Length: 321
Image 1 (cartoon, rainbow, N blue to C red):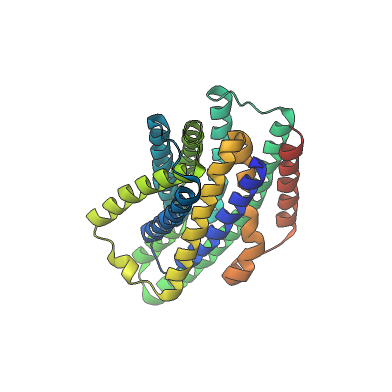
Image 2 (cartoon, rainbow, N blue to C red):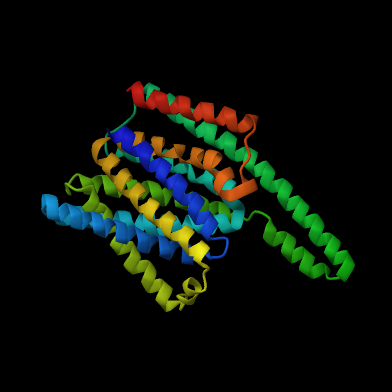
């Protein structure tokens, strides 16, 4: 059951990323994060009320609450902020590829801290999934490089026409990858894996995945909204169009369900299995991306080959324990 919940969480996260990408065509990354956190908390709150009415309030331990708070800060604040910032600097292909270090961090955590070392078939599955996703990301990197070269050529042509060579150099630099973006993507992978670890520890004390999600989500919202207020950025949200806001709201709601499914999976299965199965979220944009994002999605030999590797690795982890 934990494996099914992990896959469901991955699919929901993949869909939420597509919706968030649509919404952030007009919104900044911080605005997208705050809308997502608000929707997450509404989802968690409604489910918590439903659980209280029909099943009563679960027992609450201080250690479980602290771990849940830490998981919310690590994943919803640090991880999401690092990830969105990396997307702005190096693009989605590089950010996703580097954030796959989440799996490696999860392996280290489970092996050395939680005594959940995987067997040899799980190791083979991890290698296949990571290899498939890296292959897919490498193909996307080539496309990104081609697009940046075209952009540089266009800017140079404009510079020749208008004689503004300083502006050309600056814009060409800003359109290329940055070392800081690489660091941010790696930090995102570390933060997400740390969040999984803390949530796993929390769920050993708290008997409810809904409660764990609600505590972490509320803590993240308080911290992020406080920062948003200090920076006086609430006006960014009021300026969004209805279409952009709808995409962000839907993405945040689906993302909230994904977090709930992920926490439920962590309460039932080992962290390394859940974390590895969660990587199949990259498959969602391949199939729904062309429909929801238009021409941004492509299917070629590299995509098909990567998909086969990822599915093979997933089968090994699920059925060869």
